[in-house]
Image (cartoon, rainbow, N blue to C red; front, side, top):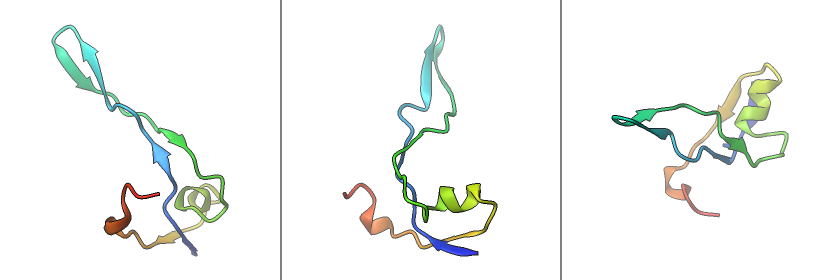
Length: 61
């Protein structure tokens, strides 16, 4: 287990237009966090990620 911090991932739109309206379309997004201690990097190494997520900082640089 490693302490980590949330990776900055942008997913763009999760919906796509169809003839009848819209439908959900999942995508893995684009990872903008090259650091080795992000939650995604730790998981990719096959370890457990211990990440504290502060919702008060969401959307802030």
